[in-house]
Image 1 (cartoon, chains in turn green, red):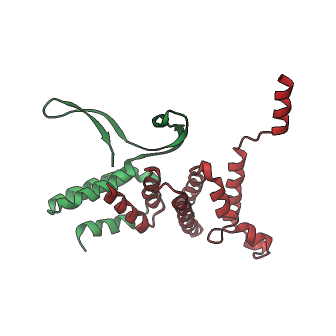
Image 2 (spheres, rainbow over the protein chains, first blue to last red):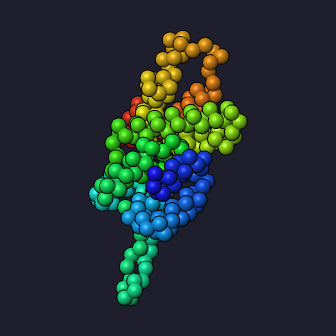
Image 3 (tube, rainbow over the protein chains, first blue to last red):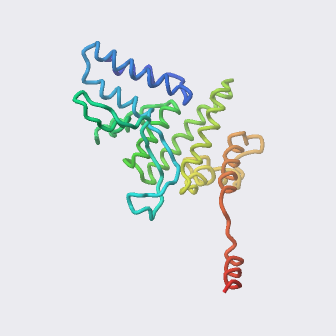
Length: 101
Length: 148
C-alpha cells in the first residue's frame, strides 16, 4: 500500500465530525507536503481535491436563479470559502476563488 | 473535471464516517453533477442508515455521537425542502427505510420495541409539516370575490 492510500485509510478511520473541519484541512495539507517529500507530486492533486471537498460552503438556501432571468428559484449550492483578487508575479490582478473544481 | 467527480464519487462510496460521507455526497449533489432524485434519495438513505450506527454508539455510551446524530438528522430533513415526500416515505413506508407505518399498522412490533429513533423520526416529520404554510382555498376565493 502506498503512502497516499495508507493516509486515506487512516483518515477514514478517524472519528471526526464537522467540528473538526480545521483538522481535516490541515490533514490534507500535511499529506500533500508528505507526498511531495516522498516524490509523489502526481498525487497531490487528489489530496488537494479531498481538502477542497471539505472547504466548500454548502448551502440549501433557495435563491433567485439570475442566470435564467431570475424567473425561477434554485438551491444556492456550492460556494467558495475564499473569493477576491490576487496580484500575480507580473503585476496583473486576477480573481482568486478557492475551492473551485 | 469529470475525473474529479468520479474520484469524489469513489470517496463517497468508501467513507463510513457520517461527516465525511455527508461532505463527499453533498459536493456531488450540490455541484449539480449528481442532482437527480435517485441520488438524493440514496444520499438521504445512506446518511440515515449511518446515523443509526452512530445511534448505536450512543447506546454504548458516546454522547458526542448522539448530539451529532440529532444534528445530521435535522440537516438531512432540512436539506430536501422540495422533496419532503422522500423523507416522509423513508421514515414511514419505504421497505429499505424505517417502514414505521407498516410495522405499526400491521402489528409487526410490540409496544416495548418502539425506541427513541422512531420518536425522533416522527418528530422531524411533524416539524417539517409545521413549517408549511396552509392556505384555505375556499376562504381565499370568497375573499377575492368579496373584493370584486
